[in-house]
Length: 336
Image: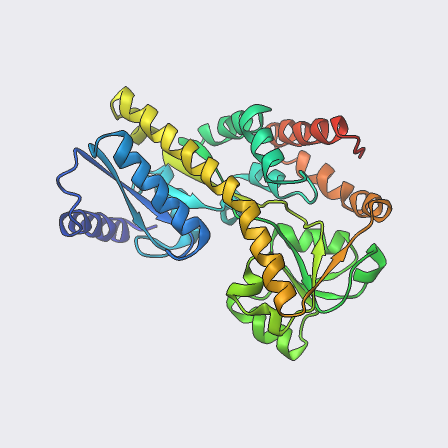
């Protein structure tokens, strides 16, 4: 980003602080969220901000900005690294070229439910290793947020891997790789365009969060939710510039870390409720659940194994993260 744009950003930040009523706080931290305010992660980010204020007695306040308000989403990671933004909430998949480790948590069928995902991240070393990978960028990983189950929403039933052969599925990035591994063709269509693509038959399905069945009225153009989801749940991150964090009082640092933990707990608890609502909304509109039998799931996992192996080679940290996931699956009787 050019110096003139950074300068304009700095002026905008100054005026924003003066105009939003946060000037009375001892410290104001500016976080940009990748999603709109009414989105699930947007609401959780606001909860994180409220927890920071509460735990610091309003001595530290987090001002949340929404997509592109301060900088383009694709430039946010560099803005945080360079200290022009204090923090970010959202998927790091946008920056997988710089943070390849983020691909690991989006490997298909890596955990079975929200409680297991949270346990792996918080208690089995996943979060620690991911934090080490982030630290080399001058960024501190504060925690993960659940975005509930994400997977195949289709016009056709899926009960075996052969059902996907030749099908056109809207998927981008890591998800496109998963579709290819499963024998489908990935079609790169923006989130805003997929309803019309489904309606017109340009694609046969999409790889998207379940809860959008109701929010996006996908029940009008889709007939099946495929279970288990590819990601149960998908997760995104909260990060902060390390120098910014370390420049705060020790008690404020701890408060921010605790606020992120509280937001993480809240999001993973809410994850199951979002999935339940999606299933109920589907039943109300005649959308069926297609369940992949356990014997067929073995074939799905085997088809995706090369993808797991490839992601593990992205960096030493990626290899450690993949091994943590494999060890957890093995302990539950799932072999790769």
